[in-house]
Amino acid sequence: MSYKLTFGIVPHNQGDEIVKAASLGGAAGGTVLMGTGTASNNILSLLGFGSSGKDVVLILVPEEIKDRVLSEMIKSTSEKKKHYGVLWTIDASRLIKAGTEYGEKTDMKEKADHQMIALIVNKGYAEDAMAAARTAGAGGGTVINAHGTAKEGDAKFFGMNIVPEKDLLIVLVPNEKCDAVLEAVKKLECLQTPGSGIAFCADAHDFTLLGAK
Image (cartoon, rainbow, N blue to C red; front, top):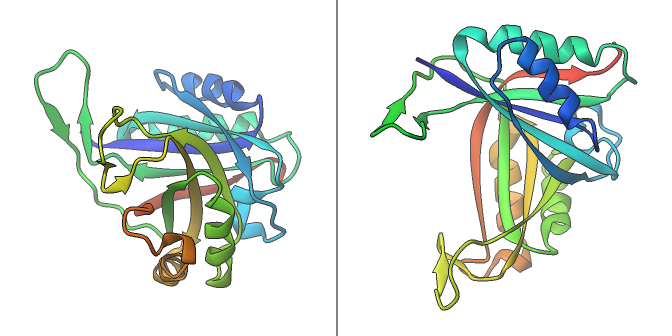
């Protein structure tokens, strides 16, 4: 069976409403994270539609009900303001269910037009990374405050020097801009020290603007 991880970014305190709508389409539930948008006027940079608080919603659904779930989420925001939020999905290539003995590999077939770039940097550098990404054609992004989970005394975590507080920056860009954005971020002075940051990309499917059309 194939699975999709659905991402939704909406105004703060609206995430639960999106999860409730997804449940009407058959989703079992979701996770809501708190983030901050990076201001931008570029429409395709919806991850940064204003610099206010955002809810980042994560919902894992089987491929067979994905369209129904997305439809309910879109319908629930149809009377909201224009550019209310953004919605997309990525392939979940490996699924581990609690209570089972093994992970389940999933099929990945669909080709995407956009890439989701996720950058984990030491706290305070997300805005620098976003500024660099914009020089390569990216628009806005969403910053999520996080922290490392390595235990005290460990020298490194995922190859990064241990700094308790982290920033996770999520940026959505067209495929053709992905390499340029990553190259621009790599050149940042604050990322020249080995282990000071990490980035990964994933195909972003089903890109949809939420809110009034």
